[in-house]
Structures are given as C-alpha cells and as structure tokens.
Image (cartoon, rainbow, N blue to C red; front, top):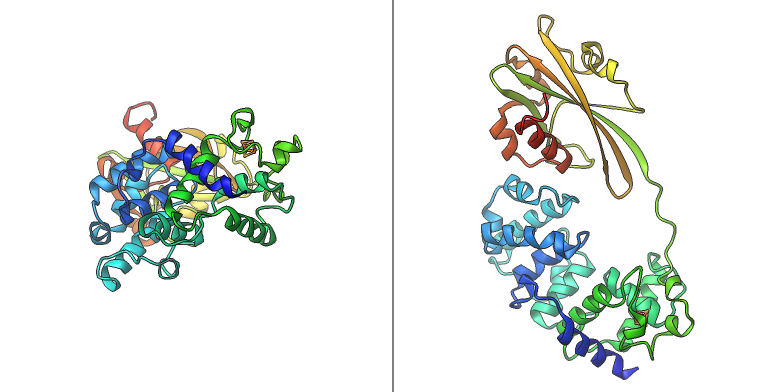
Amino acid sequence: MEDIKYLLIKFFEENKRDLPFRKERNAYHILLSEIIMQQTRIDQGTPYFLRIVEKFPTINHLAAAAEDELLRLWQGLGYYSRARNLHATAKNIADNYGGIIPNAFAELRKLKGIGDYTAAAVASIAFNEPVPVVDGNVMRVVARLFAIDVPVNSAQGKNIIKEKLLTIFLAEEPGLFNEAIMEFGALQCTPANPNCPRCVLKGYCQAYKMSATHKFPVKLAPQEVKARYLNYLVLLSNNGRIWMRQRNDKDIWKNLYEFPLIETENVVANETLLHINFWNKHLSFPEKVNITFQKTVRKSHKLTHRLLNISFTFAAVDEIFDYFSDKGFISVSIEEAEKKPKPIVIANILTEFINCKLF
Ligand code: SF4
C-alpha cells in the first residue's frame, strides 16, 4: 500500500502532459485553471485559460476589469456562475487581501465560488499545504483501488473516499501527489476503458482483482433532464440595430445578453411564431409598428439537467422604437451585439447571421 503514492508520482513524472498552467506554481494560474477545468475538458479549457491570462495577467488586472469583459472571454465555456464568482473573488482579494491570493485552505474556502476541491488544489499545489484534492478523477481511482461500493456522489461515499485517500496520500509532497493522482485518473484509469493491463497499480487494485472495474465508481442515478422551450425574436431594424437584454433573474445564463424571449411549456409551431399575435401577447408592440416576419430557425442546447429547445424567429422592423426600453431592452448595432457576452447558442446564431447565412 505504501508503494501506491510513489508509483503514482513515478507515473506522473513519466506521463504528465505539458500544460501551460503547470509551468510554474503561480497561485493565480492554478486558481484560474482549476475553476475553468471544473466542468470542462483540459483541451477545451486551455485556450480559454490562455486568453484570460493574456488579457488579465494578474488577479488585480482581473479585479479591475468589468464583469462583462470576463463573461465575454468565458463565452462558450458554460457554467457562467464560475466566471461571475471568479470575478467577485478577484475583487474581494484586491480589496481585502492586498491583491494577494490567500495561502491557506481554510482562508481560500471562504472565497465566493471556491469549494473544497479548488481550495485544496490551490493550497497544495501553490503553497504546499498537505490537503488532498478530491475531484472526479480522484474519486474514480480511489473507488476502484478500494472497490468502494457506496455511491461516490453521496455524502457517505465522499467521506469514505477521503478516508481511503488519506491512507495513500503523500503529505510531504501534497501538490505533486494531488497532480499525480488527478493525471493518473485522466490518462490511465479513465471512465470508460481504463488501461488495466498496463497499469502500475494493478497489483493493488481491488476492482481489477475482482474483474469488476466497470462497476466502479458506483453513482446515484443522475437527475432527470427536463425540457425547456425558449422562443427568441431576432428583431432587426432597417438601420441595422437589434434588440437585446441582459438576463438578471435567478436562472440560467445570469448577466448574459439575449434577444426578446417568450418561454413556453411546449413547442410552438412555425406558423404561430411567424405572426405578430404570438409576440404581442407578451411584448405588446406599438400599434403602428410595421414588422415583416422572415423565418424561424431551431436549435437545441444541452445543459447538465436541461434540454433547451430554442427557436429564433427573424423579423425586420422599419424603424427603431423606444417602447422596448421600458422592458429592459436596448437596441445595439450588430458589432455591439457581437461584443456582448452571450450564451454560446445565441453567439452562434449571431455569427451565422453576420455571415449572411440567415435572414
Ligand atoms: S488496474 Fe485499472 S481500474 Fe485499477 S487503478 Fe489501474 S487502471 Fe484503474
């Protein structure tokens, strides 16, 4: 059992990927990369990390930026609360910690959006505090090594994982150990096809000995995916302006920009969407408005527990009217719309529109 930690570190030293945030033990880089990679694959998240670090080289640069600037750079990564919390935390660090990222797990844990996982990663990798990191990769490796049959996404399962993890944890080199076991999970003990025949830990692995690696980790049934139906009106005036609004309710995509929206319980037929009556019920256009409906385009977009069925109805209007400003809308040029932070599905529609594929 004692050998496991050293075998993991040997594996890491021989196999670790060359990742930009591993080049130096910079607390800001580690904090940023861990937040980005929480729900994102490393190959998808790395370009975002590089763009954000280029634009905001330190936590103080990030704190001084507008939230919209960060949200725009985050566009496409999803889970936007991560970006909003990161920005709030950067401001907090600039205002209350002298611009220096706290160096202890307990202090990091107090910051907005920083849970056990991120606090442990920053404290151990940047500051060598002996706290183990427990992410999805680590849970899978430990669940298989010890054949833990309690669901890892239950409180009891998490406690058992932590207990077992401490029996193999290398407290003298906590950052190195944490990186090693996470990388081992990502490269060797993968979710679908772990490379057991060539695994340095197979002599210790209970799941392998039972020929049951596919049974671990045990998980509680995932939450049901619910459908939502979002109907957007992309309203373009003859002088090239478009109506948008910043979302500010407690819901998906908070603080991102969208077009006028009507959410419905079910799918709405194209004939209905292409008629002013549908939109008038909720948006109440001025009486004399002259709108020409063009076409409806449909997209679907999957979030963790939601399947969004989205329709975009394009319409031309002959003049700008202020009426919508009462409802929180602003009219912006296409270039301004492009620069606003938006959900990726709206950003993509706008790009298609700019490239003249729509309308
Ligand atoms: S033997 Fe297979 S399941 Fe066990 S730790 Fe190695 S890769 Fe993972």
